Amino acid sequence: MLDFNRRGEITITCHKFIAPALQQEVQALGFTVKDSFATGLTLLGSLNDCIHLNLNLYCASQVLYKLRSFTANHVDEVYNAVSGIDWLKIMDAEGYFSVTSNVHHPTINNSTFANLRVKDAIVDQIREKTGKRPNTGAALDGLVVHLFWKDSNAAIFLDTSGQSLGRHGYRKLPGKAPMLEALAAATIISSNWDRATPFINPMCGSGTLAIEASMIASNRKPGLYRSHYAFKHIKGFDDIEYAKAVRKLKAQIKDEKVPVIRASDISTQAVEVAIKNAKAAGVHHLIDFQVCDFAATEVPKQAAGVVFLNPEYGQRLGEEEQLEPVYSRIGDFFKQQCEGYTGYVFTANPNLARKIGLKAKRKIPFYNAKLECRLLEFELYKGRRGALHNGNLNLQKEN
Image 1 (cartoon, rainbow, N blue to C red):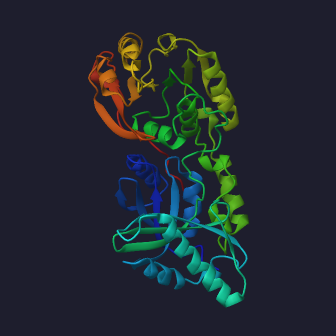
Image 2: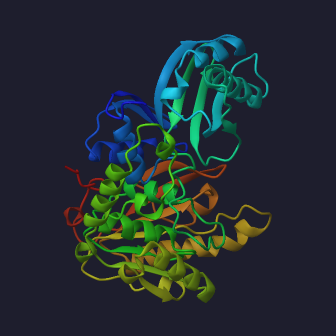
Image 3: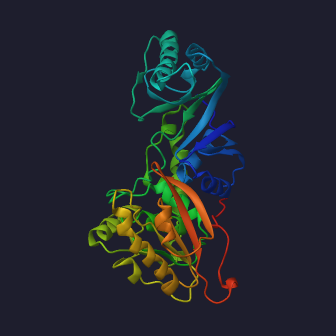
């Protein structure tokens, strides 16, 4: 079986442009980032560290533990490299595994073929050694082996996550055009919200932003909402230690320090969906829900918090013109009712963004599905500039 304390290279993947927020939370957990790139980062750690990362990260997609790096210019070289790993130390002879990949090589026009050769190498080795054949399939229900192959550089990883970490598992009703949970968390982490001042979320839709904000503020980790991970199928996994880690997550929850978190929407149905999702996440008691036009949302006075809107983008013909008055009213709302706050608008439409009528201090790039978006930050001064707090989200360091 594998030594879960042996240190090796860990790659954590995420959606494009989320890496800076991911790096913030990885460092807050006490890890040193070795390298970062557009869709993730690398660090040194053990399989036990992988478990910790899977349970704690808001912004990640997969946590990959490297087994072997090698050079490959033909798929047969991939087969040989995979055959050189002792798979009986990693999985049972009659276990179940699946193969995923990220392949960019001129000899491969279908990554399924590369996956098949990885699968063949594992099955052939185990069958030769034991006479038994492991089961394989596309479902990520057991051990997950990941192939990375770009040009001549290749590596085999254990995907310790399985299903993507980007979906945090509490959202039962998605609502209209929902934001991925990991993306919502990344935008909040990228803002200057300090978790001690109000978080106001007009146009809340299915409630994802407000729910993620309440999770972050109360120190509720995504691992509380999910029980299945691929690391549970690696030989050497200790269920007792995992149970201790989950108990630690529960003990870290701090509801008493959560500031005002308010979510509103003009749609009664949307607010009902948001409340149900918040109940599934166990944070409904931390969020004040209101049914009203966004401009009628109650914004606490004498505060310096965050007002965060995710309006429609107007992607279909004719919609942009209809949304122009909405974006103009967002600017009026900011100026008239949100003095002293920092305003944020998440949008994929720069033409509509200009209708807000305010100059953005920052324009932070993100992707929402295939749409390139910007998180626009507006300083809504009240009195002198010094009245505003600055700096990024202060994620707690853990012992």
